[in-house]
Amino acid sequence: MATDTLISAPMLGSKTKTRVYKNFIDGEWVESSSGETFENRNPADTRDVVGIFQKSNAADVNAAVEAAKQAFKKWRLMPAPRRAELVFRAAEMLIERKEDYAREMTREMGKILKETRGDVQEAIDCAYYMAGEGRRLFGPTTPSELPNKFAMAVRQPIGVCGMIAPWNFPMAIPSWKLLPAIVCGNTCVIKPAQDTPLSTFNLVRTLADAGLPKGVINVVAGFGPDAGAPLVEHSDVSAISFTGSSAVGRNVGMTAAKSFKHCSLELGGKNPMIVLDDANLDLAVEGALWGGFGTTGQRCTATSRILVQKGVYSEFVESYVERAQSLMVGNGLDESTEMGPAINERQLTSDLNYVEIGRSEGAKIVCGGNRLDDGEYRHGYFMQPTVFTDVDPRMRIAQEEIFGPVVSIIPCENLENAIEIANGIEYGLSSSLYTKDVNKAFAAMRDLYAGITYINAPTIGAEVHLPFGGVKATGNGHREGGLGAIDFYTEWKAIYVDYSDRLQKAQIDRGE
Ligand code: UN1
Image 1: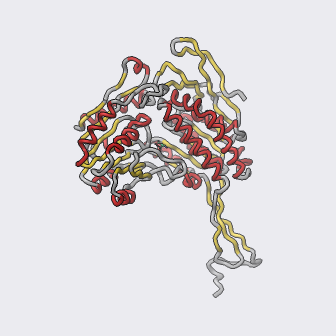
Image 2: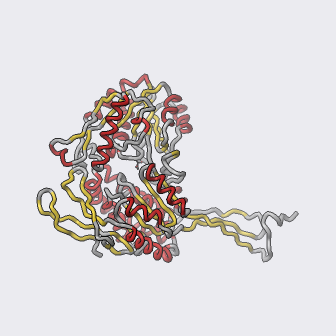
Image 3: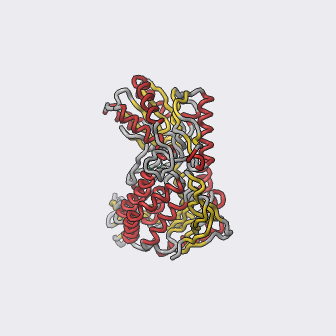
């Protein structure tokens, strides 16, 4: 099956070939109905065109949903363990393709190779985990209140699921959505982020190579208003899973509500790390660097606020800044690079704008703050790792999700004060505490109002078999990962089997 074609395009100053990737609908690779396409460029070097993708619209989405609707008729009847075997096979194939896919992901997304290998690994982990779920999908059997009557609840698939994925985890997050959905017997239409469609294509191509029947997963590339909105509005789509900003998530949720679609929203974060006086300070500094500048700060779970107790404040700031200043920024394909570029010009402009906001609010900038645009940097969206200190928790840089390498350090008095600051934001995704005091750790585990809490580890690093998601403006009560995903992609059906051979009336026939 031909999955893509090559065309000649100017790249890196010479005539080289650029791949054209088509949409994947009903098992075929097809062009957008409008014939329009868009380019996917490398954010570390915008001369590098990673691929050309289809600019899809409502007609393409309609075709994809129709294919998924037809495929659902058979797929829902395939035994779940058989569906899961296919996902297991895909996991094995992803292991073989891991390095190639990681390199392509670094080219399209910018994050460093170590991290893109981790991103593919997360899809592999998810595939193994969900493959196992295919032999569970447990539901309860429970006694009936009536004699000679059997009661149980079974999980049933929902139908066609629409997915809108973000660019920061271009294979892992699509895997969190697609794999539980198909193991549960649903069929899917996914719109990858316009900045990173290739990694979703690589995941779906692998599933197709592992034997996925046509129409079970369909991919339409494109932009939110043209391709995402028609998916959310489509009357044949029964569930929507969206990861992105809280502003867009609110609209997705409101639109989905009109047709009573199941809707899972995974939105913003402003994740605090608390460092107490008794913490292992070296460990906290290393964790805060990884949490703050890993993925160039472009994780929903990024450690964007560090709340440091006064007794260790100066010492922490000094060594954190020293380490942040020496981080190697550059092209993620170079193994020595520690931090890659921003995803695109708009994100970089927004990051730099937050630097100005922080300055104008009176926070002290102690590291970075500038765009890097000389030499090799001039073709990409690079900026320095940036640290603000003496940040007041009410400042915008301490309240709003920046999604870039800009970290705010906030002094705090004690654990109680730190937890109050940590919780004093509109989001509630991840949180972390560094301490050696087990009593304080348990109090924080109880009192940090967030979907995830780490002790002596930064705010990033979630594993696929645990619930992932958050409270307040971070989401709408659903979880990805673990059993939360199985819950989202199934409907409960209660089944009663009466073998008494007479009419028994629940709540009425009590044998009294
Ligand atoms: C995200 O933060 O956008 O927990 C997803 C982590 C990764 C997934 C992050 N496993 O850091």
